[in-house]
Every structure is written in C-alpha cells, then in structure tokens.
Length: 284
Image (cartoon, rainbow, N blue to C red; front, side, top):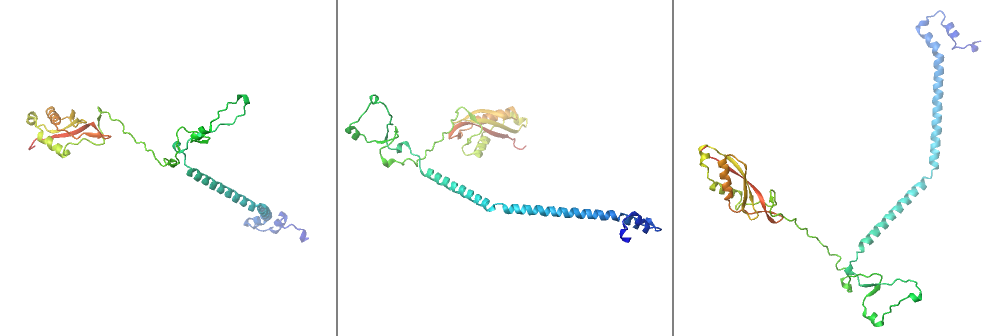
C-alpha cells in the first residue's frame, strides 16, 4: 500500500502535519515542493534542447566550410593579381617607349612627295602624266606618303632643334606717366636721405612772427608730389595747426631741391610724399 501513496498530494501532507503548527513554514515548503521539482525538470529539459541544437548548427557550419574550394578561390585571387601586375608592367613599358620617341619637327623631316592613291577607272577616262627619265633624275626628293611645305634635305639637321626651349619674355605692364602713385617699388629719396631732409627743413624754416607772439606751436603734416623728374609738384596740408604755420610749411616744401624720383617697373613715376614739420619755440 505504501507504494501507491502519493507523497506530494495535499491529503498526505495534511496527514503528516495533523496536530502540528502549520504556520511555522515547513508546511508551506512541503506543499510547494512538487511545483519546484516540476519547474526544475522543465528548465533542465530546455537547456539540454538548446545545447543539442547549438551542437547541430556548429557541425553543419563546419561541414560547409570544409566543402568550400578555398584553394581554388586563393588561386583565382593570385591569378588575378598576376594578370593585373603584368598589365601594369606592359603599360609602363609602353609609356617609356612613347617618351623615348620624340615628336618630329617640320624642319627635321626630309622633303617628300605624296604617293598617288590607286583608283580603278575606265581606260578612256585615264589621263596619264608620264615623266621622262631626265626629269626623274633631276628631282632629289623622296617618294613617300607625306608632303611638308617646310623641311630639309640635310640629314645632319635632323633632331637638331628638339632640345631648344623657347622662353617667352614677360613684358612689364605699361606705366601711366600722368598717374600719381601712393605706393611704388622704389620710393623717392632726398639727396643724403631723410636725416639730410629734416636738417634742410630746419635750416630754412622761418617761424611766423604772429605765431611767436601768440605762443603757437605744434606739428604740421604736409603732403607733396615728387614728379618723375624729381621736382616738387602739388603741395597740400593734410593736418594743419595754424594758418601761419601751415603757410610757412608749404613755402618750405615748395623750395625743396630735387629728389631722386620714385620708380615703378623700372620707370620714373610721380609719387606722393608725406613730411611732418615740427614748429617749436625755444625756451618753452
């Protein structure tokens, strides 16, 4: 009879825990043990099934890899690379041959006479032009397929002009003689330099009497044109201080001696020149 008893049945568990404290926890554990056992068996079966499927897939992939003709694929790649390399070598040889064959110049080619093309016509339409033996002996041109208007009969001049390089000389842009430049390649220069220019101005300046009486002093900036001949052209005050001081500054500038003219593209041109003149009273 003991073999027919279901130990996981609720009646058997209630019989065992009859008269005992069912709230202690053992009763609940024993009651849920059947579910835990079933769940564990189900998980084990699923794991075994997954392992079997993975093993089958791995075996199939390995067999497919072994069946591929890898040697044939590698041989095809090698053959393709060899053909490509051979083709590149042939192209390089052809380029070298083309580079070694220089282009013939018209003056390096022998005078030739065009050959007459053959054409089938009727006998009555043929017009023959026959040269005599004397005429053939007198001509010294070669018979060929090309006829140049300009050539040479001397073989010694062939390839003589091939190495010549023609360099086109760049002509400078024309310079406008009437234009006044602000920036040039070579600035105008006072004889002796800027130090000599400032000394000349200092020696020839005359302080206006009205400005002295009113104690007026300061700097006047004068701008003038040094012409292409070195003379002083237009004179103007770009920053003034006092009418008397401005007038004296313009007078001194107009009396300046000749400059060395400025140059652009190797030609003498008109150039603006800026000169600051300082007026300062002694003892102040």
